[in-house]
Amino acid sequence: MFRLDGKIALVTGGTRGIGRACSEALAAAGAHVVMAYRGNEDAAKDATAAIEAAGGKAEAVKLDVASADTVAETIKDITKRLGGLHILVNNAGIARDQLLMRVKQDEVDDTFSTNVAGTIWCCKAAIRPMMRAKEGRIINLSSVVGETGNPGQAVYSASKAAILGLTKTLAREYASRGVTVNAVAPGYIDTDMTSSLSDEIKEGIVSSTPLGRVGRPEEVAAAVLFLASEEAGYITGQVLRVNGGMYV
Ligand code: NDP
Image (cartoon, rainbow, N blue to C red; front, side):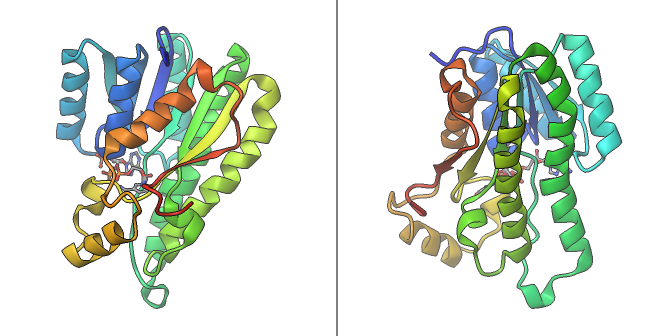
């Protein structure tokens, strides 16, 4: 079940945290995984070596998803060199947490250019090869706070809510071309992004999570792997919540 042999996958932000777990899961299922990262070379080398050591196929490419032209060139190159692009996981994301009254323009610009525009550029570049192949799986990383809101995360929550509108629209636009588009909305997951939260905040999160713990990147990756599979072929425009019951 959930085999991806012969498939080509691109995971943005695929070398750390949730993205790395997605890259590992897709590669373990047989996909050739291209992991895009912004700048952390050590993490990129480490993720590539770990997948290869496990017998998988992976490569890391440096790519800022906020740059539309670079995204288009990179995806064109992947498609030409590897013979297609079947799976796109839009996982690259940043959080600049701040109360609304303190929000600065560069925080809005950075967050939206990576989280929202970055996802749009990757979808735009991937959709042609997917349409040509009459098959494709796009999985966009949203967040529980995109649905619930969260004090101190106005900009980030807005960017993650935007992902849901984008996902539902693309699902409708490309269903007839064999491309499914879904979102995964994680709750609080143990990664570098959340490591700087204070113990008090983490305890508050755990106590408001029915399953009574934070999530692991592998638990999000399992949902991504499912949505990328043949078996999920009749699912599109949906939001799969991986949040320990925090929002139901
Ligand atoms: P991390 O901060 O651990 O990793 C982020 C990854 O994204 C890194 O690989 C980073 O590359 C890459 N990245 C950031 N900006 C860009 C860019 N402009 N272009 C290309 N790559 C970029 O994040 P998480 O693993 O925690 O989060 C992954 C996704 O899941 C995000 O979209 C996040 O919003 C979402 N999410 C996370 C939750 C959590 O609790 N952790 C909860 C809900 C949603 P590099 O290594 O080079 O810096």
